[in-house]
Length: 269
Image 1 (tube, rainbow, N blue to C red):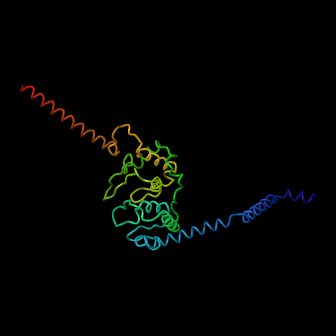
Image 2: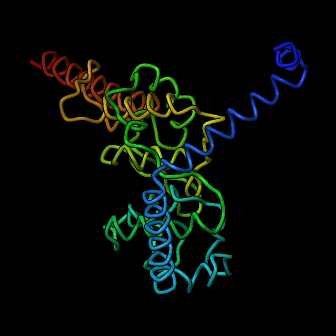
Image 3: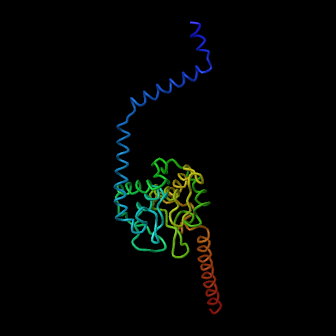
C-alpha cells in the first residue's frame, strides 16, 4: 500500500491518467462515430464536384480555361468561392450571351441543383466565400434603420438612396435592387461582382449585411409608404431638388404671366 501511495504522488501520475483518458475517449469515438454518414457525405460531395466539372467543361471552360485558371476571354475562378458562382449563375449573368462592358442579369440557364454542382467544383479549385445559410440573409432578423445608414454610407453612391440603380462609366451601370432575392444581395456584398467592391465579414459583419437587406426590403416593398409624397424614383435629394426647382419656377412664371395678362386686359377695358 505504501508503494501504491507513493506512485500516486509521483509528478507524472497526472499526465499518465490524462493520456489514458484521452486514449479511452478516442477509442470510444472511433467505435461509435457515424462513419457511414461521414463517408456518405464525402461521396455526395465528390459526386457534386464531378458533375460540376462536367457542366463547367461544357459551358464555362471556353472562357475561363480548362481548369478555371482564366484566359483572355474570362478571369480566373480559382479562389472566387461557391458564393460567387451561386450569384453569377443564379442571376443569369453567367454564362454571358456576348462580350460587353458588363454582364446583365437574365433568366438563369442552369437549375439550382446544377448551380450547386458548379459551385462545388469551383470551390474545390481554391478556398473562397461559401454560400450563406438562409438565416444570414433573412430580412426579418435585420434592423432596417441601421441598414439605411449603412446603405447610404457604402452603397448609395452607385445604387442611389433607395437602391434604384444608376449609370456608371464606360457603358456600365449599378443595377436596381428593388426586385432582387435577399440571397443574391448578401452574396454580392460578400463577393463584389464586376465593378462592385467586396465587403467580407471582416469589413462588413454578417449582422450589418442583414441590416442592409432589411432596409432594402423595407423601402422597396409595395406596402411601404413614403411620408414625403412622390418618390420621384428614389434617386435622392439632387433629383428631388431639381424637380422642385424646375416645376416650382415654371409654376411661378406661369402665374406671373397670367397676372400680367389679366392686369393688361383690365387696363384696356
